[in-house]
Length: 210
Image (cartoon, one colour):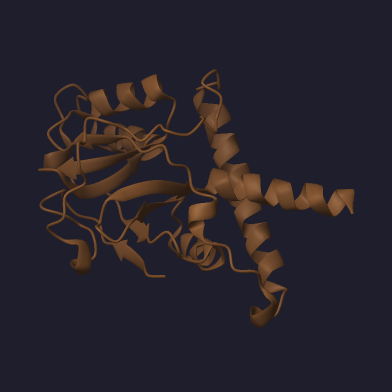
């Protein structure tokens, strides 16, 4: 049930834990979309709406964590991240431009991309980080590629990682997503604060029904 955090750095080689280094992620031009979409493809992309949703998701994650902390550790139900993660993974080579990444995220209706370096996991970025980086550095998104910039920290977990433990670490490191990798080092899913928001809403609904 390992959880690993990769420090900020350029997408050179792989930034996965040592045990997974040198292992490839497969065809990075294909995305895992074998399951039904969890979010509507008609979802608004307005920046303020997305920011409000992320704030609400973070609040839900905090409340969810507080609720779980109220229960004694032995009585806390084990919840593997494989039960709540989204299987939709999109990857892009580090040689791609930031403009291509933003376009790809908008086209597929996702907020996170796995950045690959020579077929290996080189990082995990989201739309807000990409936009903030461009604003801060006043860079041309059509000319700036990922291979020459420092990517943010990101969390990696295994499918059997306890979601409660992951929630606490996401809050501690102020990260809104974690990449799920299997025993071969291949990404199999992603866990975001939206998934915790959905879980918290489901728990609240169940309590209301009772």
